[in-house]
Amino acid sequence: MIGHNQPMLATRYPCARWATMSRRASVSAHRAADGAHGPAAINRNRSDKSELRRSSPRLRARRRSAAPLVTSVKNPRQPQLVISCHADTGFRSHRLIRENDAWGGHLDNFAGVHAVMSAYFSGRMTSDSLRIELTYGEETAMEGACEVRKTLSPDDVVVVVDVTGTVTERDITIEKCRSPRMRRFVSEALEGLSYALYEGCPDPIADADECDVYGEELGNVCFLGIPCAGGDYNAGVVSCREKSIRTASEALVRLAEHFARETHARSSAPGEADKPRS
Ligand SMILES: [Zn+2]
Image (tube, rainbow, N blue to C red; front, side, top):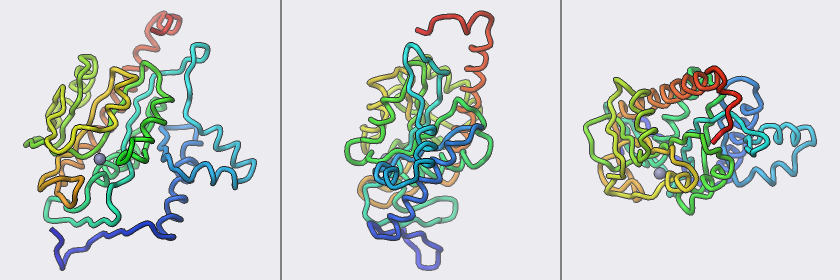
């Protein structure tokens, strides 16, 4: 899997340098959430609280204003498309390498994060109804997803992005798509893309993911999988097609665009704004 003449990315942590870089990345992500335009990419990190205590009152105020919206009956908000992608891994060291048209290495969940952030940095995700959550603790007890779940509204739609062991000729998979409304939404948004749609979870490697956490609260949840081959992605190096990551990224952009169109159409329908939310 790891060649000698190929450029290779290797990480090893915990170490001071890695910890410092992690904190910086987290602050930048929260600053991005301060902006009035476009979606927010939020990186939930255990160090946030202690960093917040150390920071200035002005920064604390800014950070509070960037907190995710919490809904109540008195203060309903517009539905959101929430893309949830775990940024932790189950490994202490990592290697990634490109081989022809494939990527090899510890892809769980670098492949997912890369697809999500490629979509974000494409500049095509301009909707205020989109929220990107890079979660922590998925590999242990899904703590990040549990935190995000508290911020959800009944009309929100959640797409979990992760690797999958499902064997398919298609570029990506949509799994755990149990709600008919969700299947219709996905089919409309991803028309023309190469994907395989499943109501259940055909992944022979593992079937527990953040969908299970969000599914306790919402019906409109599904899993967008990047197919990996070559063994157990939890145990070590595997490979995925480069095209799968590109398609995953394109699919996320299209899901966000379609969600924004649907939300706008609903809210601008005559009398719709006055109707009570169910
Ligand atoms: Zn994963």
